[in-house]
Amino acid sequence: MAELARARILVTNDDGIHAPGLKVLEAAARSLSDDVWVVAPEVEQSATSHSLTTRRPLRVRRFGERRLAVDGTPTDCVLVAAKKILLDGPPDIVLSGVNHGANLAEDVGYSGTVAAAMEAAFLGFRAIAFSQVGISGQPVDFAPAEAWLPRLIERLYDRPWQRDQLINVNFPPRRANEINAVRVTHTGRRDASVGLVEGRDPGGRPYLWIGDWADDSTSDRESDLAAIAEGAIAVTPLHLDLTHHAALAALKESFA
Ligand code: MN
Image 1 (cartoon, rainbow, N blue to C red):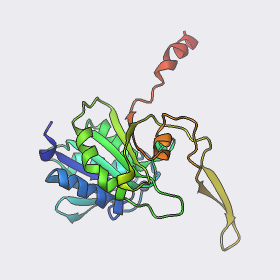
Image 2 (tube, rainbow, N blue to C red):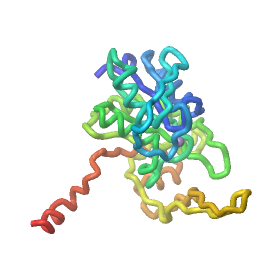
Image 3 (cartoon, protein in one colour):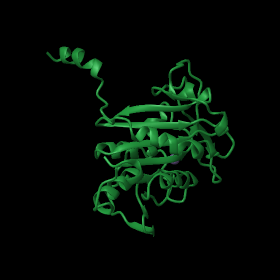
């Protein structure tokens, strides 16, 4: 693996190539290496999870020498980058984000930001997803991510990476100089799940709209939710293998 100053870094996201959080992550990557590539969705793909576009062709648009957009999902972007764009050498690390808003607890299952990192891990690359948690009703302020990204990327890059592993990082909505801890956490569970808003459109027809977001309260003090609530950066290792290993023996027993 190349040292970070020579590393090939692929930057992607799910908020789209014009998203402010992508620019923050791209700038951090460029402060660390000269070989930075951006391959991101042309338009926002939040909550598309790990979906792959298979029923229509994909188009690639070039915005700069090393800046390209794909009219697909975050997963499409990582695949296209690895198999079509970076033909002279694979990325040493894939960075996804910085997402506009949290990817904590069950968000991880819906997140396009995390899915891009999952796809990178599938392909055998080191991968980190970054998200900046906001305060409800206010625009997300990326300053904490901006201040902490370079040293976090440096620290995470040099650690031993295991196959099928990725890292999920969330920055708390605190002033950067008030953040004094990086907490290694596990993925939590909110006490309540996301809700539905009911209403009527201007023509009088009823609709349902997903997005009555649950609050982040949790009783699990070791979780990503708790770290963010306490103003720490939450760093969670994730694993691609969804097998519930503890259940294997009992399930085998049921079919013996
Ligand atoms: Mn997003």
